[in-house]
Amino acid sequence: MARSDSQLATAPASGGLDTRTLWTLLAGNTLTAIGIGFFLPILPLFVTARGGAPFLVGVVFAAGNVGRAVAQYPAGWLADRVGRRPLLLGSLLVYALLFPLYVLPIPVGALVGIRFVQSLAGGAFVPAAMALAADVTPVARRGRVFSQLRASDMVGLFLGPAVGGFVAGFRLEYVFGAGTVICLAAVLVLLWLPAARAAVPDEPVEVDLAPARPLDLLRLVLPILVLSAPVSWTFGAYDSVWSLYLSSRGASTFVIGLSFATYALPIVLFAGLAAGLSDRLGHLRAGRLTLVTHGLLAAAYPFVASVPVLVVIGVVEGGLTAAGMPALNAEVSRRAPPGAQGRTQGVYQFGLNAAQVAGAVVTGALYGLGPVYAFGSVAAVCLVCLAANLAVTRPRVL
Image 1: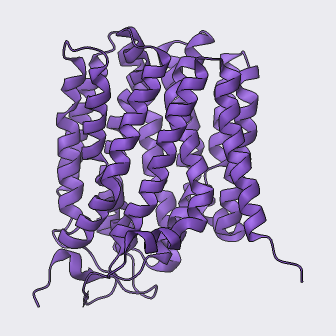
Image 2: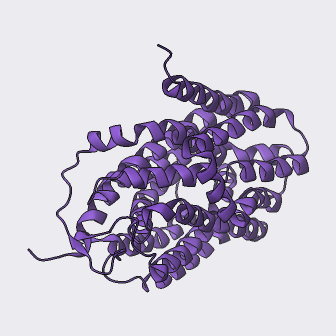
């Protein structure tokens, strides 16, 4: 049987780390995150400046999350079938070329469709990137590598919103052009990825695609998804209302962008420390700590009127939650059946994106009633899911 990119299986933990592929992926992912972070915090302001209500802002972000969610499993299947590199390059190229559509003279409601299509294209990037990171990394080192991958996301979140907020101070539309340029630069970087999927051992092993069904994979990752989905709900909620909330407290576009950047700063600086912490705590404990932090701080945010204090609390939140998601992502990669890494990541990422859809829609709607309702829903989801996880995993007393 002919051997394709998707049929090169990675070996067990004994192999070495493919540093060239990993650092190319990290560099391309960083630029991608900068391009996304450049415009995403400004999008709520852009929608409202075009006459959209807060509920429409939530729908726009929900459309993006739906698009990403729909793309996850098919993209994971394609990554297993045709290889990681074509998915990474193709999805990012289309994503970049769709930015100019935002500034066309169209009804504000059409932004929902544009965001859906763009996110559908970009959604293929994540499962392919996560699968590639797992491919080139021995099992024992995946916690650290997934922390590095998240840190590369956060570098983008650190640089993109701050500069994007500054650019938006001149004209909101400029951020979309900059997003196009930066994402195209990421495509050029990712062209350096090897044509074949890298393997950890010296010689690749030929395998057929594992016959794992989506429901089987969902059951496999469900214990992890219970802890990680509320975090994604929180991200969807803050994407929808955080910029509006800071603006209502008197923050400028630059400060709004800065607030996203400062949240990312401790994650970037302490990626290695976070990986070590998650290894010592255990992956479930790291996830629980993340839920406690998000839940308690979400409950406090609506009662804080000072913009500088809100920004500082965001830094603390970023630091305390740095270990959680990489630890859970690494655990998912370890549970993936041989030959089904892409599909396992696709199922898992689908669950995360579905949670973001719910967070964006529900929180966007509740924000129309007031910040207490919006942030209170975030706290409730995090703490209820934490309690459910503790109840399910509690040792039984006979």
